[in-house]
Structures are given as C-alpha cells and as structure tokens.
Length: 153
Image (tube, rainbow, N blue to C red; front, side, top):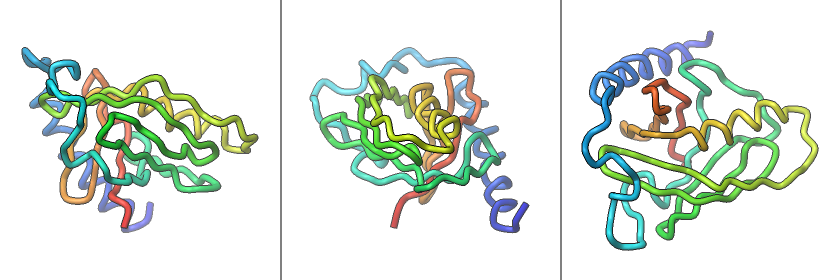
C-alpha cells in the first residue's frame, strides 16, 4: 500500500467508526422523503463533482476513466462509472440521509464491467453520507462503508 493510500485508510477508519456509532439506529425522521417541502435540493453534496477514491475502505480501482457523480438542485444525479455514463434521481434527508435510485447507464463495452457495476451498486445502496473537508464517505443501511469520494478540483 502506498503512503498516500495508507493515510487515506487511516482517515476512513475513524470516520466509519464514528458514523456507525452515531447512526446504528435510524432516527425518527431519517427518510429522504422528509427532507424538505420544496423541490430544490441543497447542501454540501449538491452541485459538486465527486471523484471516486476507494471502494469499501481500502480498494482502489483501475478504470479507463475516473468514476464520478454529481447531484444537481433538481435531484438529478449524473456521472460516469469508469466505463459508462449514468443518470438517475437523488433524494436527501435529515441526518445525512441519501437515496439514489432509477440509475440508467449507457451500454459501452468495457474490460472492467464488473468494477463499473460496483460503482453503480454503491450509489444505489447508499443510505447515509458524511463529508469531512473535501472527502465524502458513503455508508450502506447497515452502516458499512461502501466507498469514499473526493471533491473534484
């Protein structure tokens, strides 16, 4: 493991532990539907491009293109899974709840199709997120770290 990857793992482990301790039981209004009465999304995850750092807590993928995603104020999510472009819907809720659904992708042939599928699976299984500086960590419904992302420059 490189020094940079080692530091990232050291950063993700305490973040994952902290969030799992804080979110092991859903709160009373943890559903994305309860987020807001308006149709416009806002917050630090919105209108920002997020580039993939890790799958899980320490796995780096070697893809033809860097996977990324963005969520706009209208609740549309778009991005690239490393092989294909995708679009879908996003909803945000209280307590850093996130739900990404209805993902559809282009069907370009790719030697890394299994890894590309892991990216879209990560997003479709997203339940909660945590942002620390320029890092975004996505957690599943079982509080397990699904992956880490970094703000694009």
